[in-house]
Image (spheres, rainbow, N blue to C red):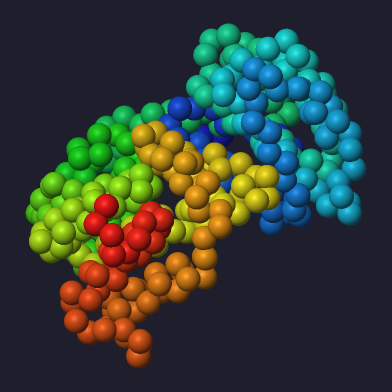
Length: 344
């Protein structure tokens, strides 16, 4: 059967199929659809997960092996197979067809791939997925669909935008749903549950016209201390909201920590990398190598202190506004692995 991406939550409330194929090029919808399936599979007792990243050298025999193997301690298992293209090749097609002919009761197979072309749609294994499981084809949204999607996402986040605000944000992100999610996150921090107009959104864009908090994150990943200091100075002069700065630094800290834990556990970081622009992915992966030995407790304690400082609570925080900016700069430099007092 086929299920649309926006229907997956409703589908999962009623059933969990033995196999899913998610195909499409829109990264956020693919990622969130896969996340929903993984979450429900875990709730249904599929507590083990094997991740397979398929490339030209991938040995499809592993699918025969795991399909027939008993899960450790009789726990049920999710097989998370990530294909670079929809073309599985001769060996891959045979392995997938065999698996689909003899579906194990203690496994859920989750396949992710790019958009299905004409040849892939007619492949025997794809047709078999439609017969015994669920095919989710993710399509790029039209401008009207994007506007409706953004309006729903904003309201689900607790925001109260008027129609012009939704239209303006839709035009600004130009169909990039990942960028839309980032912008909505900023608006939640700045406006909470207050009504939002297009002028409000334009003022936020104007305040960050030279640099944004995402430029700061890139400078941190690049270990460019001079640029970090310059961006912080400009953002402070433009009265960028400190909660937005703290959110950006804390979010980067959490991403780096999670990715380092994944490396230690031989797990994939594909889900994290898909959430960021391609130009940041290489910087992020380089940063992981130097972050493997940092004092995470120290960094998270610093971030928590910044959060309390911005809210004016706690006995260990300064009430002076400049001290907050100095502390944010200090955390940024620590994340970059640069001496706090050094200028470059």
